[in-house]
Length: 408
Image 1: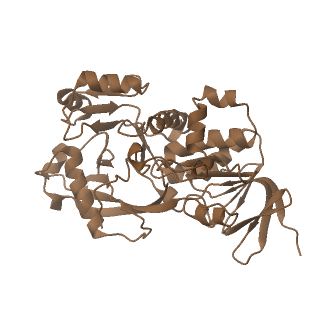
Image 2: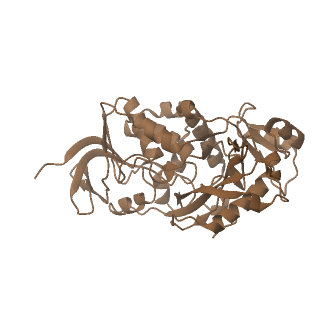
Image 3: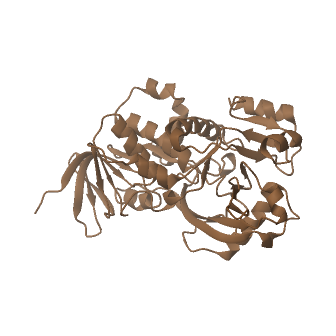
């Protein structure tokens, strides 16, 4: 019998999070083995080509707001070469009166300088963004093709081993090492340290070592619409991204003069069906009207051209789970990223690498990681007592998968 390969560090999962962590470890001079059940990187949710990124400025816990700010800066720095900075506009909530002074003071309280976020009245927004609504202009907001970014992170490297078409179904501790097993209960390889960077699969993997994670799936369908050049919608289509109840990217003009426009998305909590649904497209058409405040727009003019269906993974308290599993030394978790995979992956790469390599906390502090933020992300928060009240937290599935209403 051939003895299984041994690696000091193994990363399970080659989506955007596992790929980013692996790349960060390589940059720090480490040898890494990344393993995935698929034949290449980014085949599940990370095959998404239309993800947006911006700091969270809505309702939510102060820690969530601080964390997304740090994560946004880390993501912007990491993906600068493929960072499509078209800006994101976040309209004022329809039931709320726009107060510039109040909005400006709120942004300052989040430590968001004007080069990141600025309050605009409707006339200013129309001039800058082409959207006649008051709100906040996030000029550095961007979109990213996660599939391309993930693949770029795993280019051939002397210290990188990629193991494809290999599903890990179980983890066992063998002496001071961790053994990774397949469905036949065979040891695939062993490792000193294991980073579990999968979505819902992480629940079963953690269960195999006696750890229960409060994870559940969230299905979301994005719709790509085509609009004929002569249609009234053309004069209302955005030239920037919009994030509110749903989100959209800037409309793209086609060679025939028509437009292609991506709008999302439905939100189906507790569901993992990847099939396309007409009802979700209908829901996204209504989202489109709301994003542009164009309620008289003919929904039939938004012609279905394509879609993307993804299943996110969220935790019980809607924050990601990132950090060392102190109950099982040598195991590190990066899961429950919800719809903020671009942001949380950049953050996870720095935090997991620092913990795995035993960096001095001062290095993390320089990136903005206060001790309370590290604790807010840590897996241990689920094993030290009751979860925080859900009302105090914002969904980790916004803005791409808004929390209400649901579409079936």
